[in-house]
Length: 225
Ligand SMILES: N[C@@H](CCC(=O)N[C@@H](CS)C(=O)NCC(=O)O)C(=O)O
Figure 1 (tube, protein in one colour):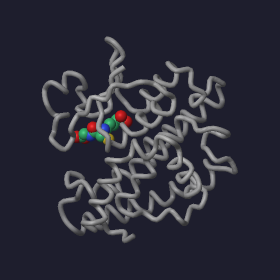
Figure 2 (figure 1 turned 45 degrees about the horizontal axis):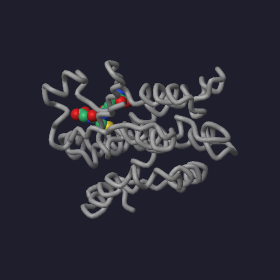
Figure 3 (figure 1 turned 30 degrees about the horizontal axis):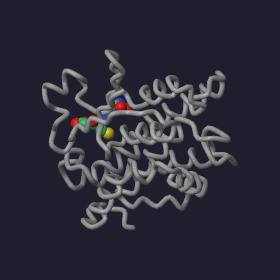
Figure 4 (figure 1 turned 90 degrees about the vertical axis):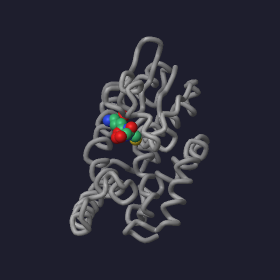
């Protein structure tokens, strides 16, 4: 199977991580987002949304990172997407939770306007107000993640990592771009450290770590390390 993606893309990395751990071979076709390759007519014919990731399995094409993870897990018969209806429903709920409220506030609201010029607000006072609102919302989501979703278990999925762990840990790790301090949420810290200790995490995050380093050096973000 072929995956159109980019190694620093937030929606590509969970797939690369899960596929590496589940030993699902994927041919990565890098779409250079920084060069605008995703905006080319050629790529728009593959995905009219002009975004990565896209999975190609023969003539079948699938967009949306969450759907791709589920397809790959089904394909491999992976326990990371449990067959038991209630356990599966919880994984679905968590993936929707990360992809909607959490990512909207933490990713698009708080992080991207500080590290991606296209997402910055046009005036300093607008940027400050938007970041302040997004930060308040994000902190509320972290409270829920810590107190509600993460219990005594190491993983969101219970005894073993689920697709929600792969997806969510990558979204949370994006906070490193702005040196976001996770220490107010000890369960989140424990969980992200456990995910980062997994065998494929470091290799999948090489390019992302370089981007974080660049951001740290530029110190453009508002939240200091
Ligand atoms: N809803 C899509 C979002 C995909 C997405 O936003 N991908 C980003 C990279 S992380 C992208 O390709 N952005 C290009 C752009 O917005 O111009 C998913 O979850 O897969």
